[in-house]
Length: 95
Picture 1 (tube, rainbow, N blue to C red):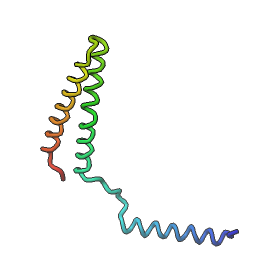
Picture 2: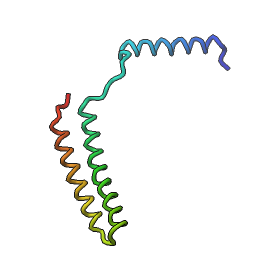
Picture 3: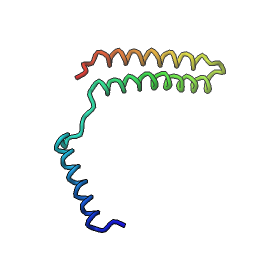
Picture 4: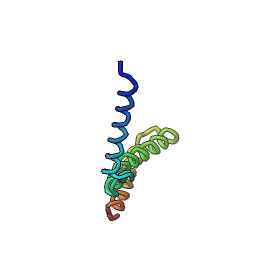
């Protein structure tokens, strides 16, 4: 079993290594680039808009009709909205 002096020595070496690493990297956490955020927004648009349109279309079908035209139209409108928003995102300047 290790005695207290070995544990204290290990704690001191770990603290020194952390201090050296913080001095090397800096204390400020790295911020992701804006392009990464834009990519995440595009992904959310591609998933969310058709999914939301599909859910709304299914709800309209469920409440008002027995056919699946509301679902089909809802998904189609969701895809159109997603691509329109992606086009807007692509016009933003990535820094």
